[in-house]
Amino acid sequence: MTERVKDTKEMIRQMRPALRDGSYHFVHVADTELAARAMLMSIASFAEDEGLSLVVPAPALTELGLSDEMPMRCITLQVHSALDGVGLTAAVATLLADNGIPCNMVAAYHHDHAFVPAEMAERALELLQDLAD
Image 1: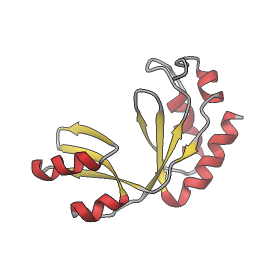
Image 2: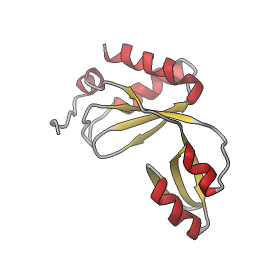
Image 3: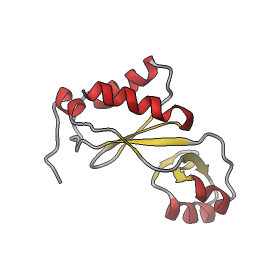
Image 4: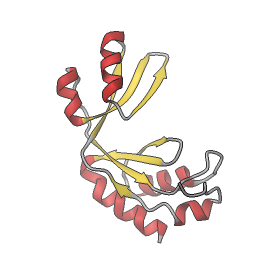
């Protein structure tokens, strides 16, 4: 793995946004048995006071019996951003917001991920590629 990047301008320059295949859904699961099954299928989770929030691939929705409210696409920022880096998330979210594209950012250990409505994903990808250039 490459060295972590901390400088704001360098994180943006190196972000190499890539659109992941498929669509994903943010869901809430309060039932512990369903949550245990859903966790195995999720790509991200967060324990909130109201229950477990998960990001699951679209095919898992039917199997889990969950509703299909808003299909999202995931754009992975492929720079290995430092956990204490400042500004990458703000730059991405601000650019997308300025262009009317909703964005849910998920920061993981190696990369940041921008989830945008499926129908806006290609435009969001173009904007982020232009920002990196």
